[in-house]
Image (cartoon, rainbow, N blue to C red; front, top):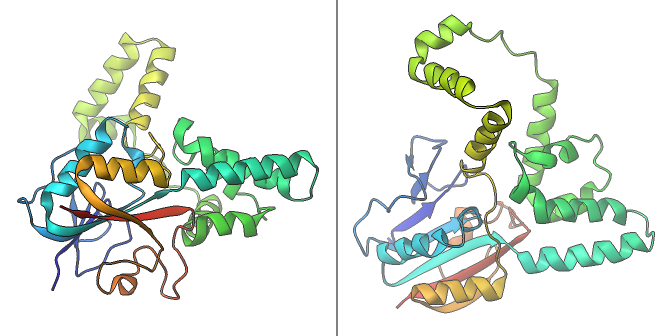
Length: 277
């Protein structure tokens, strides 16, 4: 049986794999920060996989991360990477711009969505950014287009946002004294910073903390740049794939890039595989 590693798995993991994530959603998922070295000896795995992780690393950190992936793979092992497809985003943006400019019905909304895909997760200063407002519309005017881009993930996020807006009011927050007693270091640090910093500097600190927690996109890839990055790391035989297609044995049955019926989980993705020399 081959040994497989899923990095930054979120809620898409398989019990036969070794699954790592910064915020484990299941007891079978190990906690791990993408900026740390992988806690495994060299040559430990036959497969390393990560989906929509690489774009959350800076251009400088991405090669370091991929070198760790290379290290823990055995010779001849396979890496599979899924990231948002920058080329497709750019081409759809230009198509939407042209058709919206011509006044073709429905394309003004598609143009707005493509702008969000290009920029929102790069510039946002709060969780979900403008994406939350757009997906909170009822109905979403161009849902078929949005679903075609985001797939099951877009549907899940839309339902989560709507559910949160209709849930019961939250319980009253704990008193300041109660919070201070339970979190003395955080409480004291918060108070000191508010005294030492101006309002603008304090707000900038909070934004900076948010932008460093891993939600934003720090770089984007197309097929050409992703292949070059993998090759520069030492991988060979780079090849584009599909959601249900792979040189990894029994890939489709794991349902990591696809649903049970074979539809892509994240249709906006580019899938690429390569082999360790």
